[in-house]
Length: 403
DNA sequence: TCTGGGGTCCTAGGACCC
DNA sequence: TCTGGGGTCCTAGGACCC
Image 1 (cartoon, rainbow, N blue to C red):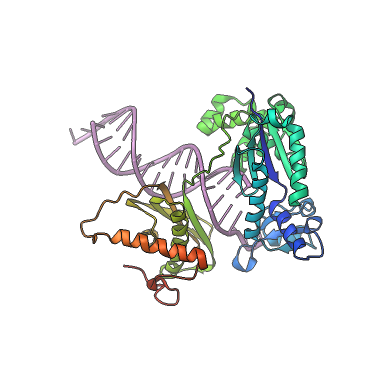
Image 2 (tube, protein in one colour):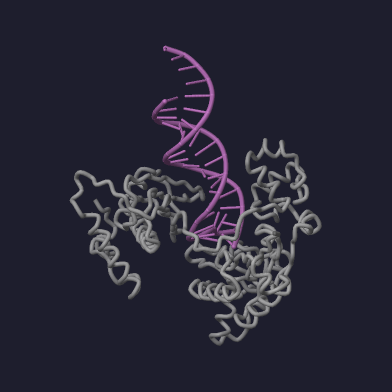
């Protein structure tokens, strides 16, 4: 049986959602109708465009433009801050609304999802009629517009929702691929970024159709296995399923851009600590343990590099994460200005098999685990800064390495 | 121009083993 | 002493996405 997949994508999500928030709080106008963007905090060196209104888009403003550049493109640009808590609320409301119709929904990001319509078609009828109906329902009950793409697989549904915006329903069925997808620029293909598209164009592969008909041997020679995948995608082939159970993360990472470059390793330890705290909290919430811990740095020339360590015993403890992260930092330290620092936990497992060290006092780890669990619970209840181990207190010994 | 943060997946190359 | 090749595991880094 032919599959029917819908891709639902919120138009200008962050900007639309902020617009609704502002209107609810008595703001005099709708920022969707103005030359407006949602921007990062410039004083914290995060001055980029996170989302833009359609008017701002018409000035040539693109997501991730610097605010400086955005202002050059549009003189009377209005810049509003982001509000992630609110975005999560709106996102949840959208997915709950869709869940009324089926549980076969794959949440792809905060503002988009796939819906497998194949089985529920007998219930709700023609998919195009259904798409228009839920598009209107979302607009009327939640107050924002979406684009919906309809196709026979996820790739084409996603391509379809990206056609003309906003507030539109598009189809890209198997028999429409040549007509609707082949003429598009090759960089419009999902999975083709800047690097790949410029390589393709140097080979005179300019449209998706060119790529679909490209010589397989040549493609393999230049792109190896990626070459085969690219041709498949260009032909609109995708067998992946709509995964609608809760997807477990494969890695958990946090990183932070420093307000100013840091030249001194010791000054980075406090940041490593709060990152350890953050990823520690997240991995414990997942009830998981990590076998691999990595530290990432970005220098003042924007070069990123990372080092990792495989652990004998997987961990989820803030204290242990911090200690290991410090030792990795020591090992990789190159004595150059650092702009960004991050910690990543990888190779996650649900069971904690511990090889007891000969010198480790018995039950030590259990005690640490129980203590951190209690602290997590209190922090969830009363706010994240409520309780901390004395040695971790910011005003106390925070900057010192744990030995 | 002065450039975020969260991820996933893939690949190259080295170490090690047989 | 000098030689090969395959397999697996690991690390580092890159491309891409939202």
